[in-house]
Image (cartoon, rainbow, N blue to C red):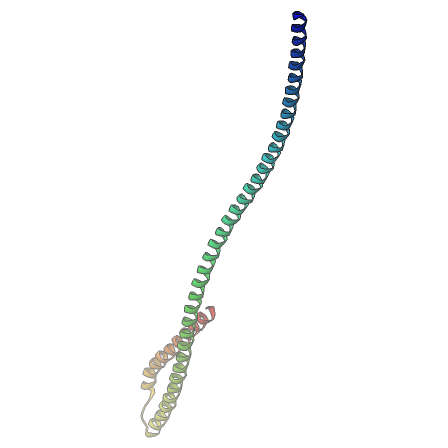
Length: 175
């Protein structure tokens, strides 16, 4: 009896151990499946996070590139603005110089007209004096030689005034 009892108890113990092993195996299997599912879920989350971080990096790189281009454009804008201000200043100086030259030209033309009038007056007065001297019987042929020299000097001075007036006019026009 005792052997039967031992065998029976041994069988029960063996059955309990097998049941316990099966229960433990089932529990371990379920835990393994749960762990694998959890691992897969976590891996998907990590992949999504990596994708999001990659997109963010690309966005930031584009932003940096855009920012660098904006800085470059601002630098170019500042240069063009500085150059435009410089050219405006040069233009203003040129306009002032042009106005001065035009005023000088006008003044020169007025002086030339006045001088021409004076020369004509003096020439008429000279002729009138020569006529009176001839009427009085004075020989004026010696005066003509001196007068020819004087007339040439007056004509040269008049021509030089005209040429300088023409040069100033063309300079004013060129500006």
